[in-house]
Image 1: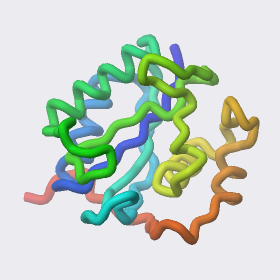
Image 2: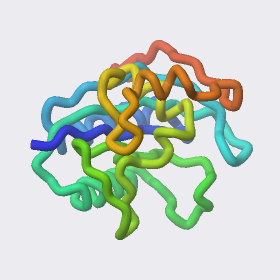
Image 3: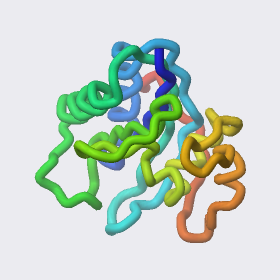
Length: 166
């Protein structure tokens, strides 16, 4: 079984879509753990704020199979792939880490480059896997978080109601 880390983000009906993503991820993977939820500004375009978190889980699927499954979950929740890369979205699921695998090709990059670039990825990853070492840099995720220039992004940990209000 491989340990995987998945970034979850949404800025279109984000509370509903984040809840739906967690249900789908729990159905697809084992030993699911969830980071705190963070609110962050849109990066690369003007748009509503995103809700972001990271999910840790285990799987016996290959990295490619995990990536395809994540795309299927996105599609089932209204992800419009005709939109530009930096745009609003119902659901964005990215495979960040797959054990200590280093891979580039076939549309898949592991570890995902966003780990080193964006607070909205690194903060929830550090909250759930701070002691884990990045397979390329060798730094702990927590050390990477402490060294990241946080002045470029507005990021706030928020309480999140996992049960939908009635």
